[in-house]
Image (cartoon, rainbow, N blue to C red; front, side, top):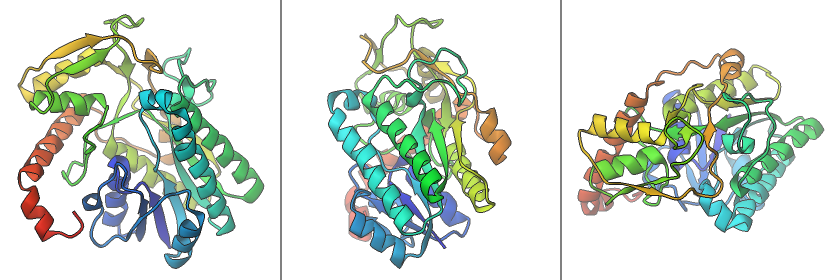
Length: 340
């Protein structure tokens, strides 16, 4: 049995690959490397470069690697970009997911884990937001993920494709062993951007909106450590292998921090100040979104280990310093490793 991880060279996917690989699981990665990196995948794990929408390639991969489960991370994820390029998001996130689900059904796959998002809730009326809250996305990104959730549910009922849908809140931090982390130079994740600013890699950090109906006027988010998130996927995989029925679950800690609180924490942990510029709101950003995550704990036995903003920021800063070190030694690394 082999687990296929789409987007396995990316931020969250590579953490998942390492976790399963460490546990002795057989893993194969499919990634188009648009935002992922070859070096993020362990050398002993097969990496196939391609699209999830390429059905002949996916079918061949499933057959040749004896794939028994799929964990689907591959997606475009930047909310403002989805507003500017909605059709690109519907192609990459929705159309490609439909093609992947069809390949899974035709290949006899019976276990599927889908990486969804809290963006399906839009501006929720209830905080913390439960899984049965109305799904009212306010961005093409959120709609693209919700459409995939709907397709997966329908495929499950029609074809016996058992699945777990995990709705992520704000993923942050890095591998505690400092092997992988958020590495995209164009990343928009607040904690990464703040860490880069604190280390002098960005001239400033912009705060988008200071007039939200929150205590300090800035958006509030539920930040979940990437390692705790991938642990939830491992728990979901075990749940499905034990015969569990389809589930849709939130992945968050149940409490949030404002943008200004995150900035203060980064300044404190790093011991450095940086320029912060106030800017207008961005389209598609909800004021506040925090997870009700009791169901994930109850159904999967999920037990987070890094529910501490200071720890999350500390791991993010450690990863940024690792990236700085890698950039300084890049010419030597490329000569030594053909996968880089």
